[in-house]
Image (cartoon, rainbow, N blue to C red; front, top):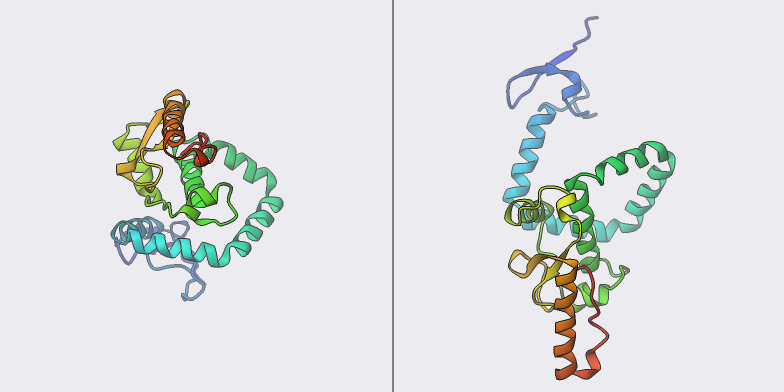
Length: 205
């Protein structure tokens, strides 16, 4: 019997090797009809056109399956320690990996009740209004930081601590300026409401 080594993509109509198609056990040949490149383009376009919907779904799914997700991640990391460590080391050197980590920190502060300082963020009504693609574009295009090295010594700062993580309320400052902004804020709080001082110590937000 002749074994096919190539397949035609339904979307772009190009004939490609089978390695260019994702697996799908529901299909006769065990592969999806569209190639990986076309699937990626479609997914990206869908997310761009349904940002709020997809972000809301992801947050809801994570909250409802947090224990299972964390358990799976721990097991996978344990079973593949060497490859995981190598991948993480390389990935975190990239601007994409670095910003994913920063974006995840914002998400956890705002959505995960067990996260450190949740009471000052999500518990106080603060939301992360950035999708990751929006955050990546904000940092690399709007603010012009293209590499991890260019972000060394820089910190994300909310201009108004009572407002959300969103483009109009976020700026990237040096550690020195960021610290001085918090000291100024604490000084105003002391004058207006002495009992609140201490709850607004500098943090990387």
